[in-house]
Length: 193
Image (cartoon, rainbow, N blue to C red; front, top):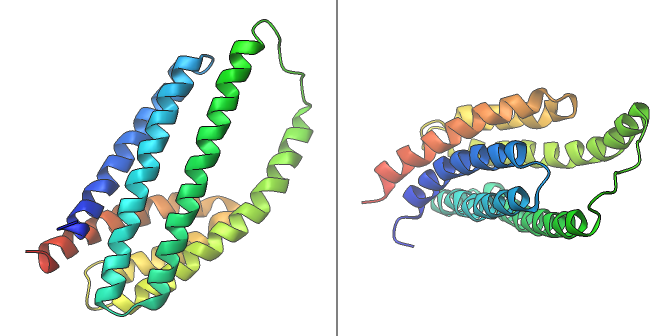
């Protein structure tokens, strides 16, 4: 790849676009195999562009000898590939189930069970992902003063990771993501000719 930082920056923009498309498909075609198929394609695109986006951080980490950032970026790529597999397998199973189970309805689950089940999965997931955000943010501190927006990204990622369990981190991570895209465009302009 000739210009990995510029590719990473544009990948960040494409991720936003595909996330909106996937959300629309999920809502508009929520009960059909067609909508699940379209959403699966969008999620696959999000996964591919996420790997390219994270690779931009690997390039920056090598340039500035930021080992923790490099390790966390590779872990992020690994988690993204795992996420792609889960989404695709889940959607294939859903599509197959939707075609085979036409006319059947799912058993009703009491609301408290749904909340409890959500919390059982959310707590370990948010702690794991939050730790990744924090370590990624600490890795970004190595770029402080050398890459524009690195310090803001570091702080936002650390705050996002620390507050993810109470859902605040979801919103903070969206802001951080915008700064990460801006940082990639700045780095591409400065370091790639």
